[in-house]
Structure formats: C-alpha cells, structure tokens
Length: 327
Ligand SMILES: [Zn+2]
Image (cartoon, rainbow, N blue to C red; front, side, top):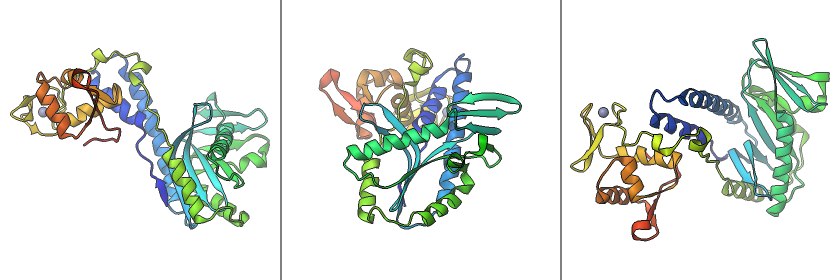
C-alpha cells in the first residue's frame, strides 16, 4: 500500500513557473532549462523504481515515495523511497546515471564514465548509509522501536548502466542494483528475514507518523538564479495562446490576442507567484502581479478562491495554497 504517493518535485514546478515568467531572451534561461532537464530525469528514474515496486506483494507493506525529514539539529535528510514491512525497512536512493558507474568501497568513492569522459561523484552508498543513521535517530526521537533492521540500497534506474564494484566487495555489491532487479533483492530479504518485529497496527502508525513529518523542500529559485522579482513577466497568461496580453473585462479574463475568455486564468498566475515569490500575497502585490488596477477585483478573486486571510486592513495577506497545481 502506498502511504504517500510520489508527486512532481516542487523544484520542477518552480523551474517551469520561472521559465513561464522570464523573457525568451533572458541570459539565465539556458542554465534553468538544463537544471530542469536534470530534475525531470531524476524524477523519471524514481518513477522507474515505483513501477517495479508496484509488483511487491508482501502483505502488509507500506511505501513512502519521496520524503524529507528534519533531524535533531534542524537540518534535513531526504529519502527517495522508503519501504516498511513487518520484518525490515528498506531505504532506496535512486540514481539516474548512464554509462559506467564504478564504486570504490575502500575509498568510499564513486566514478562515472560516460562516452569516454570520467568524473568523480559523491558516493551514493555512503549517502544511503547516512540516511539510515538519520532515520534510526528519527525513529528513536519519536519513541519508536529501532530493533527492526533497516537496509539501505542504491538503485540505478537505467538498465543499460554498467555497475562495477572495485575488488568485488560482496558487502557493497548487495547494496547496489538496477531498478528492474529490486523484486529479486526483496525476495531474498523476505526469505532471510522471517521474524516479524512489528505488528500491522504499529507498522502503519510508524508510516503515518513519518508521512506527517514530511517537509517538502521549497527553494528560493529567484535567489538561486540571481533574479530580481521585478524582472519577471507579470500578468495573467492566456490558457489558449500563452500570451500575457490578457485583460479583466466584465467579470472574466479576455485575451486581446486570440480573443479567448476565461474565468480561471488568474489561478495559474497566483500559483506562479506562490512557487516563485511566496505563500502569502497582499492586495497590492496581487494587483501588481495580475496587472489589475482594482482593489475590489483582487478581493473578489481571492475570496472566490476561498483564500484565508491573515492580518487586518492594509497589512492583511492572503494565504496561497501550497498544493499544486491550483487548476
Ligand atoms: Zn490568447
């Protein structure tokens, strides 16, 4: 059973919003586009593992797809996929690397070779073992039993990627495999781990507590790419032709370019605002971003979207939803 299904990572939604709001000739677009491709590739790799885990039948089991928890010291650790069964837990770190990836367990080092080019990269095995330490600490802090074994795995999503383990360290080789081999590895674990450490109720309780404490990462993408908010294209985007020459007329949005009208086009704009600038918006900020001159129109649109208000009169702010997409 999936306790938390994978959603599109916020960073992907943020970068898409940023590209919608930057002029076509902006010099930062190429690096944003490159990063977006990288994040989308990573997301596809995770979906690949999700696909194979759909066929995992041990009952009961709980899957948490994408997780970010706060540790004791206020910093965060991320887990691509967490699997909970009564006799063991598994942590999966998914890598979408192509070419040949070789691990040197003695040096805790990984090297990637793609089309003759070689580069060092952070060692995912050390990374996933560290995640295990963090998870154990988290369980301890939340007064859950930590006697259950937790297995950390690195999953290579592409079936064509060659995995090399230097000196053939058996201990390490057992922790790295291709996505399509995940069920074989879990079957071996099922055979080996015959003792149930937890009953179904406790297992579910742990899973629910973990999901409850998930804190998705929201980056300040304007800061990341050194973009001032005044450089963004403001206005409501036409859903039909994608232009920003859309105006508010007689209770709806009217596109002067393709002559389409819409009642909901402002939702995308407010979503962009939330992804790029912040979760709250004042009436003045909304007038600026939606290119609307009337205070009343903004009030009407925000009330219509049932946005909660905090603060009073001029300092009052509307809280934008943090569930995406708005439409
Ligand atoms: Zn249009």
